Every structure is written in C-alpha cells, then in structure tokens.
Image 1 (cartoon, rainbow over the protein chains, first blue to last red):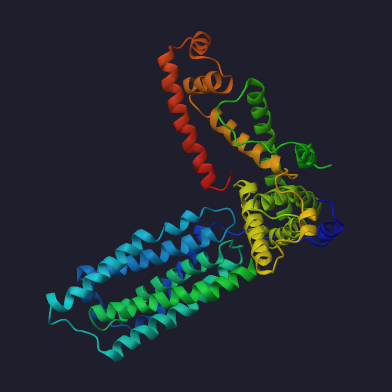
Image 2 (cartoon, each protein chain N blue to C red; image 1 turned 45 degrees about the vertical axis):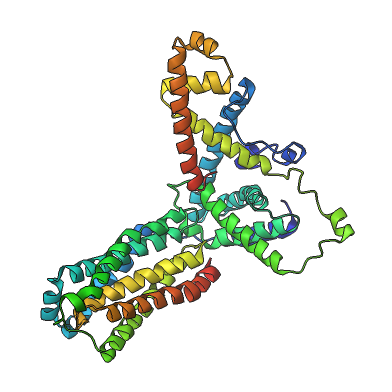
Amino acid sequence: MSDGRLDTLVDQLTADLKPVRRLAAPSLRALAWFCLLPALCLVLMPFADWHAMVERLHVPDLCVAAIGAVLTSLCAAIAAFQTSVPGRSRLWALLPLPSLALWIGASSLGCLRAWIAPDSNIADAAEMRGCLYFLLGFSLPLSVLLVVMLRRAAPMRPNLTAALAGLAAAGAAAALLVPFHPHDATASDLAMHALAVCLIIGLNGLAGGRLLDRGA
Amino acid sequence: MSFASTAMAGFGSDSCRPAAKPLSIGLGTSRASGLERHGRSAIVLEETLSATMAAAQTGDAEAYRTLLRDCMPVIAAAARSKGVRGEAVEDVVQETLMTVHRARGSYDPARPFLPWLRAIAQRRAIDALRRDGRRPREVDDPIAYEAHPDDGLPEAGQGLEAREREARLAQAVAALPRGQRQAVEQLGLREHSLAEASALTGRSTGALKVNLHRALKTLRAALAKDREDGHV
C-alpha cells in the first residue's frame, strides 16, 4: 500500500491541515434540534386555539397520542444522529419503536370514536386536507434542518438515517398540530395522518438518503 | 516507521501464511501465549491510533500523515473481507481515506478508533462492489481466469482481523472471575484433562466443569456484543 497515488492523496490531505471541531455527542445534537419544537410552539402560540386544545387533551387517547408523537420525534432524532456516526450500532434504529407503538396505538383508538361517541366533532374533507398540508409544511423545514445537521457526520447507512430523520420530523409536526387540530380523531383522519407521515418518511428516505450519501 | 507499522510488522508476510482460523477454545499452550501477545499488541495499536487521531483533530499534520498511512492496511483488510479484490482494493483505500478526512470531526477519542474506521471502509467496499456489479463481466474468459489472483490464497491483511479477534478473546478471558478463568486456561487453552486441571488448581472436577460451562456462556455473550458493536 505504498502506491504513488495514495502517497499523493496523503500529501494533499495533510497539506494545510486545519484543526477540526469535534462534533458534540449525537444525543446532544438531537436535543439541540428537538429544542426547535417548543420554540416553534411559542411562535405559533397566538394562532392556536388553546382552550380547545386543553379540552381535547383531557380525552385520554388524544393526550397519549400527543405524548407518543413527541417521544417518537425525540427518540427518532436521537436514533438518526446515532446512526449518522460511523461505527455506531444500527440497533439504535429500534429506539423510536416503543413510542411509535404508543402513538399509533393511541391514535388508532380514534377509529372507534365515531361508534363510541357519535357526537364527536368529525373532520370534513377540507379540514383533513388542512391537516395534511400542515404536517407536510412543517415537516419539510424540520427535515431539511435535520439533514443539514446529519450531514456534518458521515452516515454510513444514509437511507436508514434519513428515514429516521423523516420519522422525527413527522412526529414533531404531528405534535405541533395538536393545538391546531379542530376536530376529534377518526379513522379517516388517522388515515390522512398516516399518509402524511409515510409520505414524509418516504421522501426523506429517498431525497435525504441521497443527500446524506453525497455528504458522507 | 510509525508505531502502528511496527505493531503490524509481518503484516506483509501474512500473505505467505495460511489464513488464521477463527479462534476456538481448544488452543494449545503456545497458541494461548501467542493470543495474549497479539491481544496486547492489538490493544496498544487501538490506543495509539485513537491518540493519533485526537492529535490530528487538533491540526497536527504529522500525526495525521502517520494515521492515514497506518489506516491503509486496516482499510485494505476490511475491503478484502467484504470480497473486494485486485486493484479495486486500492480504490477503496483511497475513497475511505477521503471519507476519513471529511468525517474526522465525527470521531470521538473516548471511543475505539478501529470500529469507526472499519465502518467507513466496509461502506466504501460495498460501494465499490455495487459499482463493479453494474459493469458487464465476461465470466468464461480463460485469460481473465489466468490473470485473476486465486481467491483461495490468503491476502495481505487477513491476519489482522484474526489478531483483533484474538485480542478481544484475550480481553474477555482476562475479565472472567478467577475460577472460570482457571477452568478456561487449564481445560480450554492448555488442553489438560479434568484430573490434571483438578490437581493443578486444587478444585474438584465438578467445580471445574461448572466453571467452564459458565465461562463459555460469559465469553459467548461478550463476543456476541463485540460483534454487534462492530469490533469483530
């Protein structure tokens, strides 16, 4: 391994070597990104219907679903940052699964709402489209920021890392949606949310994976 | 010659020896002492590479140059273990070094260096194999068969991974409780009979059997965790 090509490369890489700033621990960087969530909440506060939100959070399954979305976002962000560092175990990708199960499970209870509580305020098509646009609209900048932060490391499994980033962004957007959700969860509403989350994860996995692959 | 190069002296001559077999507990006495020696050298190599990378992160160009050179055989071994052959190995080394350069800020000196490096090298090796797989290949060209190196022969660097496995095993054996360690050393590594081991250690044959059973269980768990973490 003393080929001239490699010698030249070593010379090029060591010429004018500058000190490099070590990246903070992956969990700390995940927390830094996650701090955006309360900051965005503060920005959106004047537009939210807080009274209705407090009422909705008194419904156990809606409250648990909101907590599940927040926890999924945090765990997925930690998993994304962990898998972005070479040599870290891919088992980190399993971290968001328990909170994801909680989120999906609690949200699924909404499917029964129309039968159990026929008086529920069920969303119409326009409101559900609004939810979809909200989720996509907030996930996009959150995903972009996450991918930019993840590119600073060198993800060796770019698609996995990007998909986890998508899950983190989708969870965060779903949590942000809680104060703006004007109706109770139903099967069609849940299907719309699931579609949005799958779209976000899929787009991240494809586009983000390519971006992360080029960065690594 | 850098320290790591010294630590890996004989690296090139590995190509003339048969590939090291995976370690089993039934090793002879000389093999056991060799295991400890290789274990120590691999641990020292790991610590040296980690310290050199930490220095390189602060802008020490000479340390960085040493590090990059010491990484080459490790990368080549990782590439070969993934099935990369011939000139493609050098391409993998080149691309891995470039990735190491870009990603050097992501290395945490508190953690082992080799799993970090090997993860990058393996990824670049997979990339190379994918690129190679997309190219059309003539599989019945007799000249190509003649010119192609025999994959059955050991390549330079194959011994390196075996040494690291030995180092991990030596560490795991050293971490065992005294009774279990004695059972592994006497029955497994030195291949004494139960009666001989009992006379040497002053323990009953039943206790030795139980200790060996527990030791193997502990070692299996420890080595499985290492494999999962990318050490082996």
